[in-house]
Length: 144
Image (cartoon, rainbow, N blue to C red):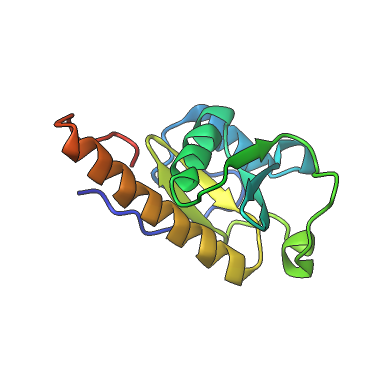
């Protein structure tokens, strides 16, 4: 079973992040600009995230399995802003953990507390997805 542990990127900006085989994710991670940042709205959290659109949607879907509400992805800064000052001021840098999603990766550009919370929500969502698909007798997912 592939690891869901976040990986620390050692990229200098010119290199490809490790284990990211999606060209669109690599491009988003290399640019790291404000224009490529999306926002995950999950329960009371508003978290900046960075990856390609497809892998962000997959990540959001898996995180959404951990809430009774909905998980939404915004391509623009949320109207209410970001409540957490640490998340509001966090900027992408290569030391942020990579969260593997299929052949791509998502980077959560948030404060360490909220990074940990979202990583745990994603792991819980993966376990939930595996349990749901196992009970249906479908083959294991390629989400990781």
